[in-house]
Image (cartoon, rainbow, N blue to C red):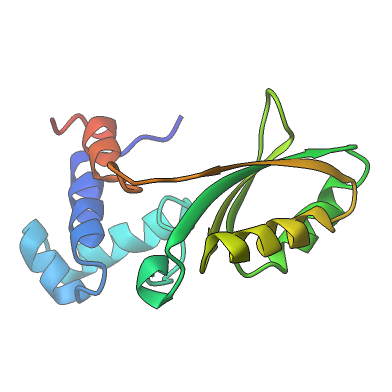
Length: 157
């Protein structure tokens, strides 16, 4: 099972804190030469530890203050078709297949509760979808994060 060593974890922690940092500054903060920082970064990307270069966008700041989690129940006839349909709904930010009650869990944003109802209606138009159950988030006391996990994975507590 792949693990992180201390240098990889420190590199990732710097990137989590400052994702737009230059490789030269990253190397300086880590106390290594630029080539070492670049090689470590390239290896983390190749291993799939570090994904994409997409900026983190706050939906509330662009007019989507409603956050909800919708569980879809399906007839399980066309999961691939449903996932493709959900990819076409811009307000669907994440899709996970799940165990337990329901088959698919989606993280969804909307401009208002009325708009959320429209988004859910759009989601229900997907193939094999039979029912939706939605929970509106009232607050987010712990936002998505990875720093504590990185520290634990490299035993940097």
